[in-house]
View: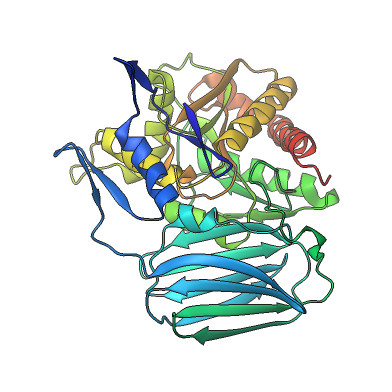
Length: 405
């Protein structure tokens, strides 16, 4: 179930009920949407069956933009002065890190802006927050200062060449921005082997090889590829997400090999993040999430609460529709190349996709638990075809949804 918020599409996952001439929306997933609209933090208390304002107060209140005769002014409105750093990175990104900052990422990311800005991203970390602003032109000269009354950070972009004829045109989130940076995530790695085939094939080795092959295919294209790992390195799921976000990633593709206790299970499948709709999708997510869902006795815990928490973070993004479309394109091309059983596109609660603020999917190339598909995964030719299928799906998605290409 989707709702529209400030020109962005948001998934509230569960159905809206109509009863006695009233509509009822699911509280667990609707409260974050309402909070983003209001610009405050709200929490659904399932025990008390009530909605309350969170105790943690935001001190990063708003983000405003205005044209100037010689450029553009960005202002970050604060509750009180904060220490901050400003860094300009490749691709015309201005990144502002606020020490001790606390903000509502969904609210800040969706602030109105003119067509001179491509996109805004806001992130909340444990002891700081970050606002990243992507301009459509190179940022060659920039000045910043902390002003008072009211407290605010002022960032002046000096550039007389900005096109101000469209300065009053608010850039719509419905328009899809060109994809310039793709993050490829080889699942597991290091101390985490992932799934293991009947003959001892390790998932972490298979998916890394496919990721490296996929990176090579993009060498001829006008995009930058970022790998979360390129060797047998242990990476926490938060580290993968942070790398994807901080690198300016605009698409996230996590590559895996599937496993099921019934060795007859076979085929290829592509997922996007949402609550699982069936037992098979739920089982796949449980397998991939296993490393962070173990209790002190080493047993897998129930994931219902964890998936509800995922949805809170997920609903701060506007990329569900794009993620689903990306999954469809990759799945179609992968099946065309591999000729494996088509298990289709599905949704489930994968932690690796949580907090990745861009279109993102998880690809299960084949079942490493199936003897025949384990043998296929062991062949270079099959892994190359898998990489080519994923590549073709990504290219199709970019061509269909990116107007500037």
